Structure formats: structure tokens, C-alpha cells
Length: 305
Image (cartoon, rainbow, N blue to C red; front, side):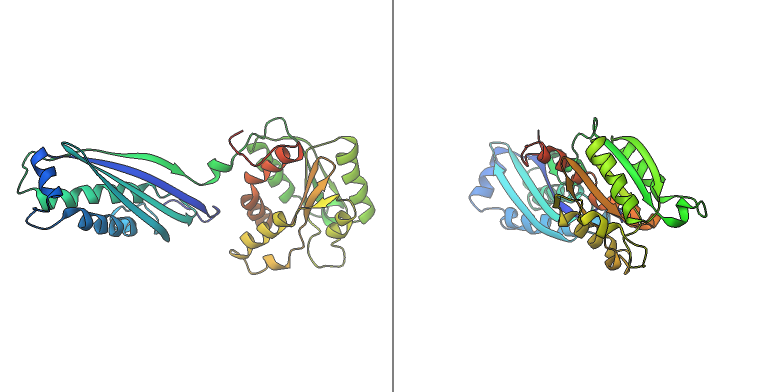
């Protein structure tokens, strides 16, 4: 079973269609309500809903899902019945298997209720018509964007400890398509923080600055205070999202004082110092956070462009 614990919840939708080939006489009997076992369509609808909700019990690698909606529609043609099933859920993984299962079971239910009347019946196809949701829907072009990574730690700056969190950020940004032009370690001194941020934002004009460290509550955790005075506009939702995501994985996430915002056309994001905090924070905000650069350049929220 695939590990989806690092994924974020998004609205997932999927529509699948099954086509059941039947004789024109069978179609007419359904319309005239003359099927001996009763009207198969409402029974098939209930069966489809139950199938969608129980997909994980019959297909081993499917995750149990908190399904929010199942819609089933039927179209009676001259010699076929088209069954359309739509499933929605706000979750970490898609619902296409639930939609396909629902459409298939609806077709099988109609088949079972009419098989004594039509020996030539055939389920000719079951296909996924559409699906939405997940990170792929929110992924935008990051190539051409320049980034800098700053590690803020007295211990690492003094050579008493090696950096892991900063390197993790560098690797992740590169994987997201950003060009990491610089990486450096500085002390927790507020003046050093201010000077370094100004260098990258005002002089080098990088698009993204990601820092790690200094967001806790120890006496030398100065990052948030230093950044507040540098930001033109804070973006509270970024830090709120990182903390909310992290809190579901560790009870200590609420203690982070991470902050994010813009200085000119540069986005600045302060991450925690621990590897786990960095990993969770990056999982929480990427790739959706890349959308901010389009907005900074006067774009709109249409992610198709």
C-alpha cells in the first residue's frame, strides 16, 4: 500500500462511465417498468454508492477514503445503457478507482436484474472520463526562478555541527525546478540576518529566499523578529499552513514561529531548524506556493496559464 502520509488533502473528483449493451426490447421493458425483479436503475444507483464507499475492501491497494459525494446517472439509448458515476472526497489520494468501481457495479447490478431476459447482454466498456485534485493540479512552472538558502545557527556557523536541514532545502528546491544560486550558513545574530536578507532580496534580486533555523523560543531564536521589519507584506497563510500540516504529525509544531512574506518581488519563507520540520513544511507548501510569483507579477489565480 503506497505511503500517502506526506500528501496534503485537496478536493478530489473523478467521473467514470460504463456502457452496458442490451437489446432494444430490454430497454423498452425498463422504461415500461416490466422487469420481473423490479426497476433496476434505483437498485443499481444504491449499489454504485455502496461500491464507491467500499472500494478499499475489494481492491487491496486502494486507501480507505472519507467519501463526500457519489452521483450516479443513467442514459437509456436504443441498445445500450450508459452509466456515469462521479465521486468526490477531500483527501490525500484520488478517487478514480472509487468512480470506476461504482460505474462497474452499477452495470453488473443491471446485468443481474435483467439477465434472464437478455442473454446477449455485454458490459462493453468501463472508462475513466475525468479526474481532478492533487498536487499536479496546482503545479506551476518554477523554472527560471532563482532561490537562495540561508541556514541560521550559531552552532553550525561555529563549525560545531554539520548542516542537514539547509541541504535538504537545496535539494528540494532543485527538484521543484528552481535555480538555487547560493547557500550559506550564518549566525543567529539579528544584524547578520538583516544584512544577508537585504543582500539577496535588494541586491541580487532573487525570487525566493528560504531560511532554516531561529524560529523557536530559545533566547537566540531571532529570525521572526528580524524578518518582520524586513517584509513589505506578510503572508500569514504560508506559515499557518506549515504549522497546521506539521501539527498533524508532531505536537511540537505549534511552537514554531515560522513567518513568510514578500520584500519587493522576493518571497521570503522562514522554516524551522529541524530536518523533520523542514521536510514537513516543504511538503505542506509546495508546489502551490510557486503560484505567488505569478501574482507578484500581476497575474491572476487562473492556474491554467
